[in-house]
Image: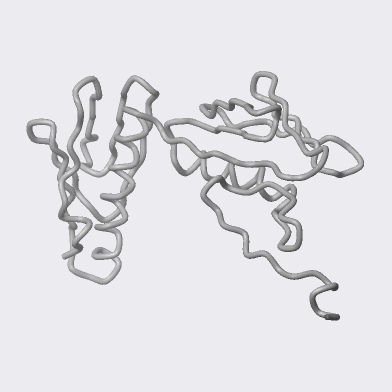
Length: 182
């Protein structure tokens, strides 16, 4: 039995959970949004605002899906209640971001500005004169993919640290040519 999978998920007040007739489809509604997902090889029970995930078999795949399903379910409840956030820091002379609605315009040293259309449900706030981008939304998977896409336009380089990085990411810096010649 999975140590993660057997932990209960507490549903806060103001958030509702509907379990489908197959006991594997879950819909979570909260103040931040609504998410729905079918979780394979598990059954889900709701008793007194506590969700429990139970594996439907004993094979290796069933055991693997047990912990994964519980983590996905906990992320859904947290996202619909509080929401998930991801911060990106832009380093470099002239590098900046501007937002207008669901479009994020990035100036990252390319010959043209990059216009990135944000996925549905993801909100963006640009602060500190365009060098801090805050993404937020209820779906952790979509949020993480959007942050990875934006970071992928200009990943941080190890010599000067220029590029787009996560706020909690540490860039290992390398010495330049001058240090090697000395």
